[in-house]
Structure formats: structure tokens, C-alpha cells
Length: 321
Image 1 (cartoon, rainbow, N blue to C red):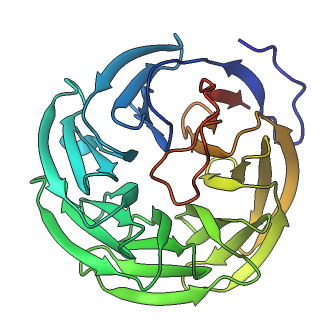
Image 2 (image 1 turned 90 degrees about the horizontal axis):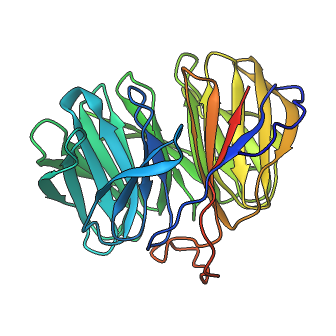
Image 3 (image 1 turned 90 degrees about the vertical axis):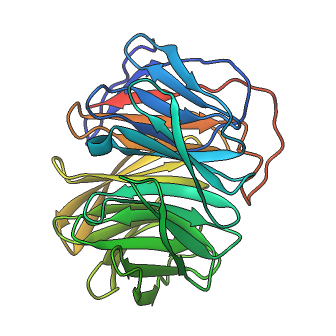
């Protein structure tokens, strides 16, 4: 455990680093809010970690080219996005046993669960599409085409999903039930959007942009209400409704914290040093005021921004306010 650093304006500071070995690259992580177990993509398998003990407590094998995991807790099911096989492995969250599989389009990458439609969505980068999977039955419900490469997505809990088109510098809004695109908005001055989070209460999108900006977008009008500067190589964003803090975790070893002063106004709070690495994926707990970063020196081999492995171990970083 690392010694706590002096906290800045946000109150967040480093409290722990956990080193984990094992085979496979690293990509998105997610956390089960009920048990606080961390589910981590590891190239060909899912690693499950107890964050308090800092040790591996489970594994789900044979998820070839996995990018991410979505948890549908009300069905006690988890879904993966397997880039190499264009499939989603479905497994039981308690036993970790496989209970099904769904076929997606080519290159499923980001994956999220939408509680309103009760569907899981994989965002298929090379196919410029998303696949909708019924979380209850495990069957494919349909496909949405975007006209650009989707990166990450966010659900507002009201029946709408938003997704970045990284190659177009656009934000798409679509209906999670009808699977119809409602709006496609330009994100200028944001370029090459990657991370995406949402203040669902106020319908505000938090967008991580590769030209070192975090942009704040009105989810009803598509208007970019403002930006704050961030570090280089953003790959994840989060928003904490309880504190009003928005986060951007970046590959240059920084975590930028901004504050929602009003639904149309954000201000820069501070930049926290974490750990340098070309890719980092991020999750923020709504109940424990902890945030988990995954600074990786080995980006997943299936991702479009390919980086050669340097053979280092992953070191997740935990911060707390």
C-alpha cells in the first residue's frame, strides 16, 4: 500500500497500488457495486479481484480478445465483448460459470448494460455498429449502424444511449428500445473522443478528447457547454453525482478532476499524479468515494491504437476522497 498523498481541492489522494501477474493484456475493468469485486479484461480471460485483499479470487476462461465486461446484476449475469471471435460470453456472476453466448458484429469493443431496456450493448469498432443483446434471454435483439467507429458509450437510464464516434469527432444519441439514431452531433473543439461518462440527472455528457480536453455536452441539444484541459492519452471518464466531480484518466500518469458548478458549467479542480501508461481504464464507486484506475503498460492487442507490450505487470491504482 502506498502512503496517502496530501489531498488537493477534490480530496482525492492515492491510497493503494496492487500488483497483479498472470497472462494476457489489459483493457476495460468494471466493479460489482454490491460485492465490490473488480472484473478485469485479460486478453483471453476475465480476472476477478478482491480489492480489499488485493488478490485474485476468480477467473472466467476462453474470452478470446476480450475488451470489456458489462454487469446485469438484476439477472445475475455478466457479458463480455470478445474481439477476436465477435461474440459475447455470458456468465453467472455468482458461480462465474458460462451460461450462454451471443454473436456480435466484427470487433466488439466497449460494452455497457442499459437498465431501462434491459439490454447489453456491444460497440463494434470495425463494423461501425452496436449489437443489442437481451439480458434476460441472451438473444440478440438487433443492430444499430452509426456511420463511424464507436468508442465508449453511456446510458441515461431513461431509454437513451450515447456513444462517441472517435474517427468522426461526433456524439450519437439513440433510443435503446427502438434502436433508432435520434441525433448525431459534432463535438468541436473536441477531437478524437475516447472516454465518455454521464450526469444522467441533468443529461450532461462528459467526453474525453485526444486533443487534451474534457468536454461537457448537453444531452438534449448536443451543445458543447465548455471544456477543461486534461493530460495526454485520455481513455476513460467518470462522473460522481454525489460530489459533482468529473474525472479524466490519462496515459501520461494524470487524473484530472473537474467540478459541475451547474449543469452548463464545469470548472477545473486539480490534476492528480497516478501512474504513467499508454492506456488506463477507470471506475468510480458511488458508495465508497473510491476511484479505480488501471494504468497499463500493455494495451490490448485488439484495440485500434496498437502499442507493443513492454512486458510489465499491471498496477491498479486506487484513490479515495
